Length: 282
Image (spheres, helix red, strand yellow):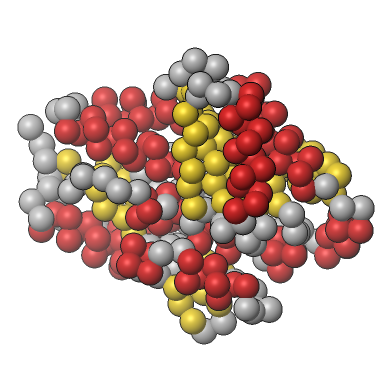
């Protein structure tokens, strides 16, 4: 039986999850504020970046891992005795990480690499990773592992809303004119991470609490009332988290709710006033 490693990136926030899988590795997606780089999230957590973001007017930026860094990770895993890497990165529609992974694959020797477009990120990607590790431990082959974990993606959904559109404007994802109109009218977007891995704005609603209710309602229409698991992700905005949890627990008292920190690489693009609600139907 081949010795299989699972590789991902920091958009999964896997570094915040306690687990016992020695074959699970990740590459940082660097975040920048001015000349300062934020990496090593396993050591530093997301809070250092959150705090820096609160205290700056500079536009945060992110970057995909370089081909050289990706190659170095492949070689590190190979040198630990692994024979095959299943690489599960952020959606290729959201980052160049997937493309660089393929470029590095052409350069590495002595190990096989299977790169999967997960079409997702954040907590859904985290769930995919943990399931992949469970399947490795159970002795499944590479193709079966990939097939099984991608059913998680097919049976999941993820919705995001923001209280402040400033970060989207700074990052060029929303025009300043649209932002001024939206902020003046107190409109808040409801955004879906679609099945093909893109972020698409579905609607705008009045007030942030109404937007939180709207994303929960979208999940409520799709989650399995018996086997579904809620995901709620936030960036230190505890009041918004509690507001969402109260609604979910009142409507779905028997379903499990998992709480996640939004990873820095996501917060860099959307800001700190953000809440995401998703689900996985197991």
